Image 1 (spheres, rainbow, N blue to C red):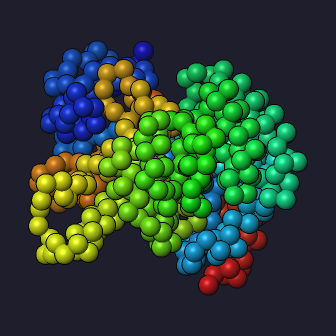
Image 2: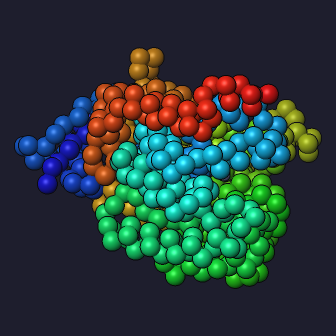
Image 3: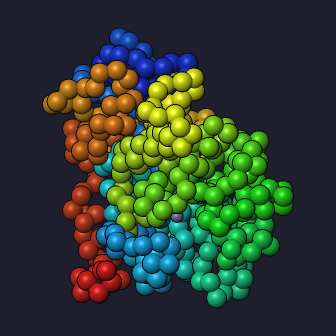
Length: 449
Ligand SMILES: [Zn+2]
Protein backbone atom coordinates (compact mmCIF):
# COMPACT_ATOMS: atom_id res chain seq x y z
CA UNK A 1 0.00 0.00 0.00
CA UNK A 2 1.43 3.37 -1.00
CA UNK A 3 1.80 5.94 1.75
CA UNK A 4 1.78 9.71 1.37
CA UNK A 5 2.92 12.09 4.09
CA UNK A 6 1.84 15.71 4.00
CA UNK A 7 4.35 17.45 6.19
CA UNK A 8 4.18 20.66 8.21
CA UNK A 9 0.79 22.04 7.17
CA UNK A 10 -1.64 24.27 9.03
CA UNK A 11 -4.31 21.57 9.23
CA UNK A 12 -7.97 22.54 9.61
CA UNK A 13 -9.32 19.09 10.39
CA UNK A 14 -12.95 20.23 10.78
CA UNK A 15 -13.15 17.35 13.24
CA UNK A 16 -14.43 18.50 16.64
CA UNK A 17 -12.07 16.22 18.53
CA UNK A 18 -8.94 17.26 16.61
CA UNK A 19 -9.52 20.95 15.87
CA UNK A 20 -6.84 22.98 14.08
CA UNK A 21 -3.24 21.77 14.18
CA UNK A 22 -0.34 24.07 13.30
CA UNK A 23 2.78 22.55 11.69
CA UNK A 24 1.11 19.16 11.58
CA UNK A 25 1.37 16.10 9.37
CA UNK A 26 -1.22 13.91 7.72
CA UNK A 27 -0.31 10.35 6.79
CA UNK A 28 -2.37 8.76 4.03
CA UNK A 29 -2.29 5.02 3.42
CA UNK A 30 -4.11 3.86 0.32
CA UNK A 31 -7.37 5.75 0.01
CA UNK A 32 -7.70 6.68 3.69
CA UNK A 33 -6.19 8.96 6.29
CA UNK A 34 -4.13 6.86 8.67
CA UNK A 35 -2.83 9.46 11.15
CA UNK A 36 -3.05 13.18 11.89
CA UNK A 37 -0.59 14.84 14.26
CA UNK A 38 2.80 16.44 14.72
CA UNK A 39 6.10 14.83 13.64
CA UNK A 40 4.52 11.64 12.38
CA UNK A 41 6.63 8.66 11.40
CA UNK A 42 6.08 7.51 7.85
CA UNK A 43 7.27 4.36 6.07
CA UNK A 44 10.70 4.97 4.45
CA UNK A 45 9.24 4.63 0.96
CA UNK A 46 6.38 7.06 1.65
CA UNK A 47 5.97 9.95 -0.75
CA UNK A 48 6.39 13.29 1.03
CA UNK A 49 4.83 16.63 0.30
CA UNK A 50 6.25 19.69 2.00
CA UNK A 51 3.30 21.82 3.07
CA UNK A 52 5.11 24.53 4.96
CA UNK A 53 3.13 27.76 4.73
CA UNK A 54 0.11 25.93 3.36
CA UNK A 55 -3.39 25.44 4.71
CA UNK A 56 -4.72 21.88 4.54
CA UNK A 57 -8.50 21.54 4.47
CA UNK A 58 -10.89 18.69 3.68
CA UNK A 59 -11.80 18.55 -0.01
CA UNK A 60 -14.69 20.92 -0.71
CA UNK A 61 -18.10 19.35 -1.34
CA UNK A 62 -20.72 20.94 -3.59
CA UNK A 63 -24.23 19.68 -2.83
CA UNK A 64 -26.08 21.03 -5.84
CA UNK A 65 -24.80 21.62 -9.35
CA UNK A 66 -26.22 20.86 -12.80
CA UNK A 67 -22.95 19.90 -14.43
CA UNK A 68 -24.44 19.55 -17.90
CA UNK A 69 -24.64 23.36 -17.97
CA UNK A 70 -20.86 23.77 -17.66
CA UNK A 71 -20.29 24.42 -21.38
CA UNK A 72 -23.12 27.00 -21.29
CA UNK A 73 -21.07 29.32 -19.07
CA UNK A 74 -22.28 32.87 -19.59
CA UNK A 75 -25.57 31.95 -21.23
CA UNK A 76 -27.40 32.76 -18.00
CA UNK A 77 -25.30 35.78 -17.12
CA UNK A 78 -27.85 38.54 -17.55
CA UNK A 79 -31.06 36.64 -16.92
CA UNK A 80 -33.79 38.22 -14.84
CA UNK A 81 -35.72 35.74 -12.72
CA UNK A 82 -37.01 32.23 -13.27
CA UNK A 83 -39.04 32.91 -16.45
CA UNK A 84 -35.85 34.05 -18.23
CA UNK A 85 -34.03 30.93 -17.06
CA UNK A 86 -36.92 28.71 -18.14
CA UNK A 87 -36.91 30.37 -21.54
CA UNK A 88 -33.22 30.71 -22.37
CA UNK A 89 -31.25 28.11 -20.40
CA UNK A 90 -33.32 25.14 -19.25
CA UNK A 91 -34.70 24.21 -22.70
CA UNK A 92 -31.12 23.88 -23.95
CA UNK A 93 -31.13 20.43 -22.35
CA UNK A 94 -33.25 19.18 -25.23
CA UNK A 95 -30.37 19.96 -27.60
CA UNK A 96 -27.84 17.89 -25.67
CA UNK A 97 -27.09 14.47 -27.10
CA UNK A 98 -25.70 11.69 -24.90
CA UNK A 99 -22.07 12.37 -26.02
CA UNK A 100 -22.58 16.03 -25.08
CA UNK A 101 -23.36 14.87 -21.55
CA UNK A 102 -20.06 13.01 -21.30
CA UNK A 103 -18.15 16.04 -22.55
CA UNK A 104 -20.03 18.43 -20.25
CA UNK A 105 -19.56 16.31 -17.13
CA UNK A 106 -15.88 15.70 -17.91
CA UNK A 107 -15.20 19.41 -18.45
CA UNK A 108 -17.10 20.60 -15.38
CA UNK A 109 -15.56 17.89 -13.19
CA UNK A 110 -12.07 18.79 -14.33
CA UNK A 111 -12.64 22.48 -13.58
CA UNK A 112 -14.13 21.67 -10.19
CA UNK A 113 -11.20 19.47 -9.20
CA UNK A 114 -8.86 22.25 -10.29
CA UNK A 115 -10.80 24.53 -7.89
CA UNK A 116 -10.58 22.12 -4.94
CA UNK A 117 -14.09 20.63 -5.21
CA UNK A 118 -13.39 16.95 -4.63
CA UNK A 119 -17.03 15.85 -4.30
CA UNK A 120 -20.16 17.04 -6.04
CA UNK A 121 -23.82 16.15 -6.10
CA UNK A 122 -24.48 16.36 -9.84
CA UNK A 123 -28.21 17.09 -10.00
CA UNK A 124 -28.64 15.75 -13.52
CA UNK A 125 -32.02 16.95 -14.74
CA UNK A 126 -30.93 16.14 -18.24
CA UNK A 127 -31.45 12.39 -18.45
CA UNK A 128 -33.53 12.76 -21.59
CA UNK A 129 -32.61 9.21 -22.72
CA UNK A 130 -30.95 6.31 -20.93
CA UNK A 131 -27.81 7.14 -22.92
CA UNK A 132 -27.65 10.59 -21.35
CA UNK A 133 -27.27 9.03 -17.90
CA UNK A 134 -24.75 6.43 -19.09
CA UNK A 135 -22.61 9.02 -20.84
CA UNK A 136 -22.72 11.40 -17.85
CA UNK A 137 -21.41 8.65 -15.62
CA UNK A 138 -18.71 7.83 -18.18
CA UNK A 139 -17.60 11.49 -18.11
CA UNK A 140 -17.47 11.50 -14.33
CA UNK A 141 -15.41 8.32 -14.26
CA UNK A 142 -12.76 9.97 -16.42
CA UNK A 143 -12.10 12.85 -14.00
CA UNK A 144 -11.59 10.93 -10.77
CA UNK A 145 -13.82 13.40 -8.93
CA UNK A 146 -16.08 11.90 -6.27
CA UNK A 147 -19.60 12.25 -7.66
CA UNK A 148 -23.04 11.54 -6.33
CA UNK A 149 -24.77 11.26 -9.68
CA UNK A 150 -28.32 12.30 -8.83
CA UNK A 151 -30.36 10.74 -11.61
CA UNK A 152 -32.94 13.22 -12.83
CA UNK A 153 -36.57 12.09 -12.74
CA UNK A 154 -37.76 15.36 -14.28
CA UNK A 155 -37.76 14.60 -17.98
CA UNK A 156 -39.86 16.19 -20.67
CA UNK A 157 -42.82 17.85 -18.99
CA UNK A 158 -45.36 16.52 -21.48
CA UNK A 159 -44.43 12.88 -20.89
CA UNK A 160 -43.39 12.73 -17.23
CA UNK A 161 -45.80 9.90 -16.34
CA UNK A 162 -45.32 8.03 -19.62
CA UNK A 163 -41.51 8.09 -19.24
CA UNK A 164 -41.58 7.12 -15.58
CA UNK A 165 -41.31 3.33 -16.11
CA UNK A 166 -38.09 3.43 -18.16
CA UNK A 167 -36.49 5.92 -15.79
CA UNK A 168 -37.31 3.76 -12.79
CA UNK A 169 -35.98 0.69 -14.60
CA UNK A 170 -32.73 2.49 -15.37
CA UNK A 171 -32.37 3.72 -11.79
CA UNK A 172 -32.65 0.11 -10.62
CA UNK A 173 -30.06 -1.03 -13.17
CA UNK A 174 -27.60 1.76 -12.31
CA UNK A 175 -28.06 1.21 -8.58
CA UNK A 176 -27.09 -2.42 -9.06
CA UNK A 177 -24.19 -1.59 -11.38
CA UNK A 178 -22.68 1.25 -9.32
CA UNK A 179 -23.49 -0.51 -6.06
CA UNK A 180 -21.28 -3.46 -7.01
CA UNK A 181 -18.20 -1.25 -6.67
CA UNK A 182 -18.36 -0.21 -3.03
CA UNK A 183 -15.08 1.72 -3.36
CA UNK A 184 -16.17 3.48 -6.56
CA UNK A 185 -16.02 7.25 -6.65
CA UNK A 186 -19.20 7.61 -8.70
CA UNK A 187 -22.27 6.67 -6.71
CA UNK A 188 -25.92 6.86 -7.59
CA UNK A 189 -28.40 9.25 -6.06
CA UNK A 190 -31.84 10.40 -7.11
CA UNK A 191 -32.83 13.88 -8.29
CA UNK A 192 -36.49 13.63 -7.41
CA UNK A 193 -38.97 15.44 -9.67
CA UNK A 194 -40.33 18.83 -8.64
CA UNK A 195 -43.70 18.60 -6.89
CA UNK A 196 -45.19 21.43 -8.95
CA UNK A 197 -44.54 19.54 -12.19
CA UNK A 198 -44.55 15.87 -11.18
CA UNK A 199 -47.26 15.84 -8.50
CA UNK A 200 -47.20 14.01 -5.19
CA UNK A 201 -47.92 10.53 -6.52
CA UNK A 202 -44.97 10.39 -8.94
CA UNK A 203 -42.73 11.98 -6.31
CA UNK A 204 -43.89 9.46 -3.71
CA UNK A 205 -43.00 6.59 -6.05
CA UNK A 206 -39.55 8.10 -6.60
CA UNK A 207 -38.80 8.63 -2.92
CA UNK A 208 -39.97 5.13 -2.04
CA UNK A 209 -37.75 3.77 -4.82
CA UNK A 210 -34.76 5.76 -3.53
CA UNK A 211 -35.33 4.51 0.03
CA UNK A 212 -35.68 0.90 -1.13
CA UNK A 213 -32.37 1.19 -2.99
CA UNK A 214 -30.61 3.22 -0.26
CA UNK A 215 -29.96 6.21 -2.55
CA UNK A 216 -29.34 9.74 -1.23
CA UNK A 217 -31.98 12.03 -2.76
CA UNK A 218 -32.49 15.71 -3.44
CA UNK A 219 -35.21 17.93 -4.88
CA UNK A 220 -35.74 21.55 -5.96
CA UNK A 221 -37.93 23.31 -3.38
CA UNK A 222 -39.11 26.48 -5.14
CA UNK A 223 -42.83 27.15 -4.53
CA UNK A 224 -43.63 27.42 -0.81
CA UNK A 225 -44.97 24.72 1.52
CA UNK A 226 -43.53 21.67 -0.24
CA UNK A 227 -41.47 20.59 2.77
CA UNK A 228 -44.69 20.59 4.80
CA UNK A 229 -46.47 18.68 2.03
CA UNK A 230 -43.77 15.99 2.00
CA UNK A 231 -43.68 15.89 5.80
CA UNK A 232 -47.44 15.38 6.04
CA UNK A 233 -47.13 12.60 3.45
CA UNK A 234 -44.53 10.92 5.67
CA UNK A 235 -41.82 11.33 3.05
CA UNK A 236 -39.25 13.63 4.68
CA UNK A 237 -35.95 12.19 5.87
CA UNK A 238 -32.28 13.00 6.32
CA UNK A 239 -31.71 11.24 2.97
CA UNK A 240 -33.85 13.79 1.07
CA UNK A 241 -32.08 17.12 0.57
CA UNK A 242 -34.20 20.18 -0.35
CA UNK A 243 -32.48 22.81 -2.50
CA UNK A 244 -33.12 26.58 -2.07
CA UNK A 245 -36.24 26.42 0.15
CA UNK A 246 -36.09 30.22 0.44
CA UNK A 247 -39.73 30.45 1.52
CA UNK A 248 -39.70 27.63 4.08
CA UNK A 249 -41.80 28.44 7.14
CA UNK A 250 -40.64 27.89 10.72
CA UNK A 251 -42.67 24.70 11.12
CA UNK A 252 -41.04 23.29 7.98
CA UNK A 253 -37.58 24.01 9.36
CA UNK A 254 -38.61 22.23 12.57
CA UNK A 255 -39.75 19.23 10.53
CA UNK A 256 -36.40 19.12 8.73
CA UNK A 257 -34.40 19.52 11.93
CA UNK A 258 -36.41 16.77 13.61
CA UNK A 259 -35.38 14.28 10.93
CA UNK A 260 -31.75 15.42 10.86
CA UNK A 261 -32.11 17.02 7.45
CA UNK A 262 -30.27 19.83 5.71
CA UNK A 263 -30.85 22.36 2.93
CA UNK A 264 -28.56 23.06 0.01
CA UNK A 265 -28.22 26.81 -0.61
CA UNK A 266 -26.98 28.05 -3.97
CA UNK A 267 -26.45 31.55 -2.82
CA UNK A 268 -25.14 33.34 -5.89
CA UNK A 269 -28.08 32.24 -8.03
CA UNK A 270 -30.64 32.82 -5.26
CA UNK A 271 -29.33 36.19 -4.18
CA UNK A 272 -29.03 37.48 -7.73
CA UNK A 273 -32.53 36.18 -8.40
CA UNK A 274 -33.96 38.31 -5.60
CA UNK A 275 -34.95 35.45 -3.33
CA UNK A 276 -35.44 35.66 0.44
CA UNK A 277 -31.98 35.09 1.87
CA UNK A 278 -32.75 35.15 5.60
CA UNK A 279 -33.57 31.45 5.18
CA UNK A 280 -29.93 30.44 5.68
CA UNK A 281 -29.60 31.99 9.11
CA UNK A 282 -33.07 30.78 10.07
CA UNK A 283 -32.25 27.24 8.98
CA UNK A 284 -28.90 27.30 10.79
CA UNK A 285 -30.45 28.51 14.04
CA UNK A 286 -33.27 25.96 13.73
CA UNK A 287 -30.77 23.09 13.66
CA UNK A 288 -31.04 22.36 9.94
CA UNK A 289 -27.58 21.77 8.43
CA UNK A 290 -26.84 24.18 5.56
CA UNK A 291 -24.57 23.20 2.71
CA UNK A 292 -23.65 25.04 -0.49
CA UNK A 293 -23.77 24.54 -4.24
CA UNK A 294 -22.96 26.36 -7.47
CA UNK A 295 -26.24 25.17 -9.06
CA UNK A 296 -26.16 26.74 -12.53
CA UNK A 297 -22.73 26.96 -14.17
CA UNK A 298 -24.53 28.75 -17.03
CA UNK A 299 -24.38 31.74 -14.70
CA UNK A 300 -22.29 30.94 -11.60
CA UNK A 301 -18.58 30.09 -11.58
CA UNK A 302 -17.57 26.57 -10.52
CA UNK A 303 -16.06 28.04 -7.38
CA UNK A 304 -17.10 27.17 -3.82
CA UNK A 305 -14.77 29.78 -2.31
CA UNK A 306 -16.95 32.42 -3.95
CA UNK A 307 -20.07 30.74 -2.57
CA UNK A 308 -18.65 30.61 0.96
CA UNK A 309 -17.65 34.26 0.86
CA UNK A 310 -20.94 35.51 -0.54
CA UNK A 311 -22.94 33.35 1.88
CA UNK A 312 -21.07 34.78 4.84
CA UNK A 313 -21.73 38.36 3.76
CA UNK A 314 -25.35 37.65 2.86
CA UNK A 315 -25.91 36.17 6.32
CA UNK A 316 -24.13 39.05 8.05
CA UNK A 317 -26.18 41.52 6.01
CA UNK A 318 -29.40 39.82 7.10
CA UNK A 319 -28.37 39.94 10.74
CA UNK A 320 -27.42 43.59 10.44
CA UNK A 321 -30.68 44.44 8.70
CA UNK A 322 -32.68 42.78 11.47
CA UNK A 323 -30.83 44.92 14.00
CA UNK A 324 -31.38 48.08 11.98
CA UNK A 325 -35.10 47.41 11.52
CA UNK A 326 -35.56 47.02 15.27
CA UNK A 327 -33.79 50.31 15.97
CA UNK A 328 -30.50 48.83 17.21
CA UNK A 329 -28.33 51.11 15.16
CA UNK A 330 -25.41 51.69 14.92
CA UNK A 331 -24.48 48.02 15.22
CA UNK A 332 -23.22 46.84 18.59
CA UNK A 333 -22.41 43.35 19.80
CA UNK A 334 -24.96 41.74 22.09
CA UNK A 335 -25.33 38.12 23.26
CA UNK A 336 -25.89 35.87 20.25
CA UNK A 337 -25.39 38.64 17.70
CA UNK A 338 -23.61 38.45 15.35
CA UNK A 339 -24.17 34.73 15.10
CA UNK A 340 -22.53 33.70 11.85
CA UNK A 341 -18.74 33.39 11.66
CA UNK A 342 -16.46 32.71 8.68
CA UNK A 343 -15.69 29.23 10.01
CA UNK A 344 -19.35 28.26 9.66
CA UNK A 345 -18.93 28.58 5.88
CA UNK A 346 -16.12 26.04 5.83
CA UNK A 347 -18.34 23.73 7.88
CA UNK A 348 -21.10 24.18 5.31
CA UNK A 349 -18.76 23.16 2.47
CA UNK A 350 -17.16 20.20 4.29
CA UNK A 351 -18.77 18.44 7.28
CA UNK A 352 -22.33 19.59 6.59
CA UNK A 353 -22.04 18.82 2.90
CA UNK A 354 -20.65 15.37 3.61
CA UNK A 355 -23.77 14.61 5.65
CA UNK A 356 -25.95 16.00 2.88
CA UNK A 357 -24.52 13.55 0.34
CA UNK A 358 -24.85 10.65 2.77
CA UNK A 359 -21.12 10.36 3.57
CA UNK A 360 -20.88 12.15 6.92
CA UNK A 361 -19.07 9.22 8.50
CA UNK A 362 -16.10 9.27 6.12
CA UNK A 363 -15.92 12.57 4.22
CA UNK A 364 -15.65 16.26 5.12
CA UNK A 365 -13.06 15.88 7.90
CA UNK A 366 -9.33 15.22 8.19
CA UNK A 367 -9.34 12.42 10.73
CA UNK A 368 -7.97 8.87 10.95
CA UNK A 369 -10.23 6.47 9.05
CA UNK A 370 -11.76 9.13 6.80
CA UNK A 371 -11.33 8.98 3.04
CA UNK A 372 -8.28 10.96 1.97
CA UNK A 373 -9.91 13.84 0.07
CA UNK A 374 -7.78 16.89 0.80
CA UNK A 375 -7.01 20.33 -0.56
CA UNK A 376 -3.83 22.26 0.12
CA UNK A 377 -4.05 26.03 -0.24
CA UNK A 378 -1.21 28.43 -0.79
CA UNK A 379 -1.30 31.52 1.43
CA UNK A 380 1.58 33.27 -0.30
CA UNK A 381 3.09 35.51 -1.33
CA UNK A 382 1.16 38.16 0.61
CA UNK A 383 0.98 36.25 3.91
CA UNK A 384 -1.60 34.36 5.85
CA UNK A 385 -4.42 36.17 7.66
CA UNK A 386 -4.17 37.02 11.30
CA UNK A 387 -6.61 35.21 13.54
CA UNK A 388 -8.73 32.21 12.53
CA UNK A 389 -7.16 30.32 9.59
CA UNK A 390 -10.69 29.29 8.49
CA UNK A 391 -11.37 32.97 7.87
CA UNK A 392 -8.42 33.00 5.48
CA UNK A 393 -10.02 30.15 3.50
CA UNK A 394 -13.42 31.82 3.40
CA UNK A 395 -12.50 35.47 2.94
CA UNK A 396 -9.13 35.40 1.16
CA UNK A 397 -8.76 32.20 -0.86
CA UNK A 398 -9.70 31.63 -4.49
CA UNK A 399 -9.31 28.64 -6.84
CA UNK A 400 -5.98 30.18 -7.88
CA UNK A 401 -4.67 29.31 -4.40
CA UNK A 402 -5.47 25.60 -4.79
CA UNK A 403 -2.00 24.08 -4.89
CA UNK A 404 -2.70 20.39 -4.31
CA UNK A 405 -5.81 18.22 -4.57
CA UNK A 406 -6.00 14.65 -3.33
CA UNK A 407 -9.02 12.40 -3.92
CA UNK A 408 -9.17 8.88 -2.52
CA UNK A 409 -5.50 9.18 -1.56
CA UNK A 410 -4.51 9.99 -5.16
CA UNK A 411 -2.95 13.24 -6.30
CA UNK A 412 -5.18 15.01 -8.84
CA UNK A 413 -3.33 18.32 -8.65
CA UNK A 414 0.12 19.14 -7.38
CA UNK A 415 2.07 22.40 -7.29
CA UNK A 416 -0.77 24.09 -9.16
CA UNK A 417 -0.83 21.57 -12.04
CA UNK A 418 -3.46 18.90 -12.65
CA UNK A 419 -2.22 15.33 -12.42
CA UNK A 420 -3.62 12.81 -14.93
CA UNK A 421 -5.93 15.42 -16.43
CA UNK A 422 -5.34 18.11 -19.03
CA UNK A 423 -7.04 21.48 -18.94
CA UNK A 424 -6.81 21.50 -22.74
CA UNK A 425 -8.93 18.32 -22.89
CA UNK A 426 -11.65 20.01 -20.84
CA UNK A 427 -11.51 23.07 -23.06
CA UNK A 428 -11.79 20.87 -26.14
CA UNK A 429 -14.81 19.08 -24.63
CA UNK A 430 -16.49 22.45 -24.00
CA UNK A 431 -15.78 23.49 -27.59
CA UNK A 432 -17.34 20.28 -28.94
CA UNK A 433 -20.52 20.72 -26.89
CA UNK A 434 -20.88 24.34 -27.96
CA UNK A 435 -20.37 23.43 -31.58
CA UNK A 436 -23.02 20.71 -31.46
CA UNK A 437 -25.52 22.31 -29.06
CA UNK A 438 -25.22 25.97 -29.91
CA UNK A 439 -24.03 25.64 -33.50
CA UNK A 440 -21.11 27.90 -32.68
CA UNK A 441 -20.77 31.38 -31.33
CA UNK A 442 -23.61 32.77 -33.43
CA UNK A 443 -26.18 31.07 -31.23
CA UNK A 444 -24.57 32.51 -28.09
CA UNK A 445 -24.84 35.98 -29.54
CA UNK A 446 -28.49 35.46 -30.47
CA UNK A 447 -29.55 34.52 -26.94
CA UNK A 448 -27.55 37.26 -25.26
CA UNK A 449 -29.72 40.04 -23.86
ZN1 LIG B 1 -30.80 23.57 -9.32
